[in-house]
Structures are given as C-alpha cells and as structure tokens.
Image 1 (cartoon, rainbow, N blue to C red):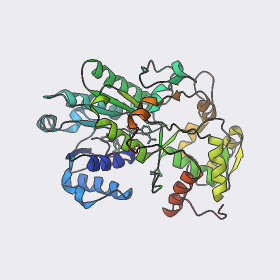
Image 2: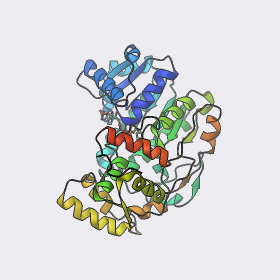
Image 3: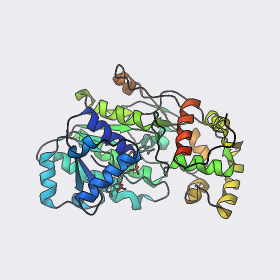
Image 4: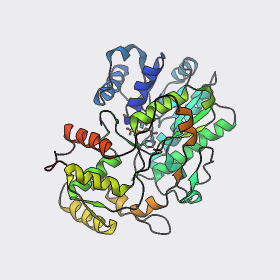
Length: 370
Ligand SMILES: NC(=O)c1ccc[n+]([C@@H]2O[C@H](COP(=O)([O-])OP(=O)(O)OC[C@H]3O[C@@H](n4cnc5c(N)ncnc54)[C@H](OP(=O)(O)O)[C@@H]3O)[C@@H](O)[C@H]2O)c1
C-alpha cells in the first residue's frame, strides 16, 4: 500500500492488518528501513491504532511516489512486482494551493508507476483512492451522479490538486478498460474517527474550524456538509476490496445522511465555541483583517479563500452550491449486513470531535459548555 504514513493510510493499514492475514508492504519516504518502520509505527500510534502484534506484518519499502520506478532499483521493483498480490494506492500530496505542475509527479506519475507494478510479471488488482472532487467539472454542476458515471472532462476543475486526482483516476480507468482489475473509491472530505474523535488536525477542515473559532465568526453558507468519518471510509474500502465482485467498479463513500453547513455552525456555537454566523463576504473581510494582525490557523490558506473561481468569479461559498450530489446506492447496498454504516454528522458526533480537539490541545476548552 501507499500512503501508510498519512491520515487515511493509518486507518486503512489498521483495517488491512485486522481484516486480512496478509503481510503489508508499505511504500514509505525515509532514509532506511528502520526509520521507515518507525515512521509507520509512530503514525499508527498518533491515531491510537498501534498494536505490537503488527510489527512482523508491516514491511517498509523505502521509495518515493514522485520518482521513476518509485525510486526503487530495477531489481527491487521487479522483486516487489513478483512478491505482492494486490495494491492499495492511497498516497498522494494533498494541497489546495499548489498548481498542477507542483503535484503532478507524486499524484499522476506516481499512479503511473503503480500501474506498471500492477502489470509486471503477474496481474494484481489495484484499489485506487480517488476523491469525489473528480466530479467538480462543469459537466456535473448541480447534478446527481451515480457510481457508474464516467468522469468526462476537467473544464471547471480549478484546483491543481483535483486536476491531478482527475488525471490519475483517468489513467487507472484506461488501465481497467485494457483488462487490469481496478476498483476506485471516491471519498469526500474525511473527518476524524467517529469513536475516538481523533482527526488529522493539520487538514483543511480542522484548520477551517479552528480559524473560525479564533476569529469568533463563521460564514453562513447555504450548502450541505460533505464529511465522512475516517473509520467508515477505511472499513468500507477494505470490506469492499475483499469482494471479488467489486473489481471494475467505483464506489462513492459520501455520507448518505444529509446535514447542512449552517446546522453544523449552529452546533459548534452550542458546544460553547461562540461563533457568530455572518455572510461570507463579511467573514472574508474579517479573515483578511485577522490574518494581517495575529496568528490564525487559516493564514496559509488565505489565497484559497480570497480566490474567485471560474468565469462566474465564485467565492468559496458559491462553489458549495454547484457541487454534485453523489449517489452512493451501490456502496450502501454492498455494505448492507456488514455492520459498516456511515454515521450522520450531528451534534453528538461534533461533540466527539471537539472533545478530541480540546483533549489534544488543538483548541482551548470553551468557556461556556452547552
Ligand atoms: N483527507 C481527505 O479529506 C481526502 C478526501 C478525499 C480523498 N482523499 C484521498 O485519500 C488519500 C489519503 O489522504 P490523506 O488525507 O490520508 O492524506 P495525508 O494524510 O496527507 O497522507 C498522504 C500520504 O501520502 C504519502 N505521500 C505523499 N507524497 C509521497 C511521495 N512522493 N512518495 C511517497 N509517499 C508520499 C505521505 O507520505 P509522507 O508521510 O512521507 O508525507 C502520506 O503517507 C489521498 O489519495 C487523497 O487524495 C483524501
């Protein structure tokens, strides 16, 4: 698997170790195998997922997605291609500010190398972690898309990151048409563990929430919230990937239970974090003022929030309104009877997440508790 030192990767690795008896070869960026092993273990520990019984089944493969042959020697690449039976390609650089050119080598060319690995010596099924954002193009504005819908074109996809994910998904789709057993998983924004609340607090959503709490205001946005807990995503991917009938299919891992953004903003306030809901334009003006004068979690993301998108010059809030509605009927049907169910983002789940934010010192405890 790739990306085992990341957020989703930690949960995916844990599920693979628990739901299978396989040894897991993990591509990892490190100076040597021992440091690679430690990096994977540290990551699992940081999400409270580590168990010492895993040691012998995690095999670090020192390499790099952005380099030809994953930076392995020809012999190492060949040996790996003979040894492994299945590939989970989850690694990528997630960045909402960098252009396509800065992300292409890891996200696109890395996927091409994984396809080579899947085809060499013996055919190995490839499970590719994509994103729901591949449907951000103008072909789908405001439409409902099923899991068999092709990803048509990139017109209207403005983020370099999303463009790389679109091209990478297209590559694996072409490989599937040529006979490689490929399954595609499309999560939306991934939230923390629904049981412990643990979340990658360095990600976009956490920074956004923290930045708003620091400012004391949150934008009013007339759209749904597209969050899914990481334990749902990882359990669903591993469960589905083990079904032979999943080969050749795409799965939408969005939350089938709707919650609106404004509802969530209201609950955050009820939890005691005291955020006023104001119009997006007012919030943007406050953001510029705040980031100019004090530390704010959104400072590095200012270009993202100030950007105007596509010909219509939409704000970030405007983007939410034209997003596709993902139909996840096939995924939900295949998970029926498995005990893997996606929880709604409600007050109780938010309380679990915010309790973790406080427990981990990501946020100060609120002065008033609802
Ligand atoms: N998080 C979300 O909300 C979300 C939503 C939809 C889809 N996804 C997809 O889910 C997957 C995992 O996302 P995540 O949130 O877990 O991301 P993450 O926490 O940033 O982890 C990314 C992983 O990819 C690895 N990676 C990046 N560049 C690499 C390179 N050049 N060579 C080797 N490994 C490299 C990282 O390794 P290092 O530790 O060495 O950096 C890390 O293990 C990605 O494919 C992403 O596109 C995520």
